[in-house]
Every structure is written in structure tokens, then in C-alpha cells.
Image (cartoon, rainbow, N blue to C red; front, side, top):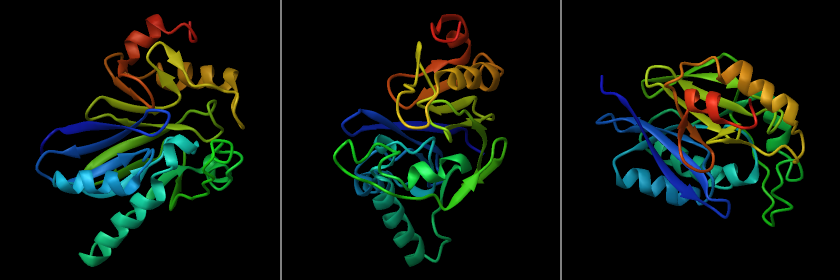
Length: 220
């Protein structure tokens, strides 16, 4: 079985990282945080021979979900036409209310109200296996109450959303945010991972767990 690879599209007004994970030659991808222009995400993946097998949300802020419904619709239509199972969206169970509220997810304030949902709400520690790839859900409340990260142990990859950035952390002044909770989540849930784990954040460039343990000024 080929190794797990990760690609990135930078999308939307907040320059949000939308990731896609795949095994070369397998023809399927997991999309994390379809930030905007979901139809374009779908077409770009299909052009490169990748069908959407599932969609993972790290949290429900507007700049991570604006492309969700269009991507889900396109992927489900293709799956139905080909006789495959519908494509499902996964999110942490504590994020349900934020996803369906344009006030809580800040989309109304950002000028493009968006209310949406996940098809499957998952719990801390739950494993998700799609397209031959397995990740573990790590609940990391703080940026939002239902924020989470996805840890692909086989590949040493953590997709951290807006929980942990290179030498920074997510803001906590939006609804359901808490800086104290966020720092605890990082220290207790993320800094216990192997130090060489590659961290792919919701904005900016990648880092590693070890580097952030030693250099992140918010988590010292």
C-alpha cells in the first residue's frame, strides 16, 4: 500500500488551508476544511484523478465551511451516478450548534451567512477510516467548543485546524472560544504526540510538534 500524501489549496478571504489526503494511485481523497468555492475544489481533485471519499471539518468557522455544501453536493452527485455510497461530512459532536448558526460561526458578520451540518458527529478518540486511510479524532476545544484535530498516525501527520499554528495558536475572541481551554488542549492533547509529527494548520505553513513544544510562545 502506498504512503499517505497531503496536498493543499489556499482559499478564500482568510487564506485558509484546505487539505486533501490520498494514497498515490488509489484515486480517492479526504478533504479537510473546504474553505470556499467547493465546486472548484471538486473539479481540481477530479482533474487530478481524485474522487472525494469524505470531508473532515476541524471546526465550523465561516472560512473553513464556505465551500462545504457545494463540495458535498458535487461529490454526492458523482457518487450516486457511479453507484457509490454518499460522501459524508465529519465533525466533532460539540460543534453541531456552531455549524448551524450563522451568528456563532461568524459567517453573518463576514457578509455571507452560512448554516450547515455534518452528516456524522464524532467523539474524542474515535477513529475514522475512509479510502484506506485511518485518522484519530483529537478533541481540542478552545478556538471553538467543538474544535478538533485529525491525527494520521501511519503518516505522522496532524491536521490541526485553527488550534495550533507555527509559533502561534488560534484566536479565542469569537463565540465559544477560550484561551485557557485552548492552551490546555494543546499541552494535554497535542504535545503528547511524537515530536516529529508534522503539523498542518488552518492558516500558514506547516510545523512540527517538537518545534512548537520548544518555541511556541503561547504554550510555554
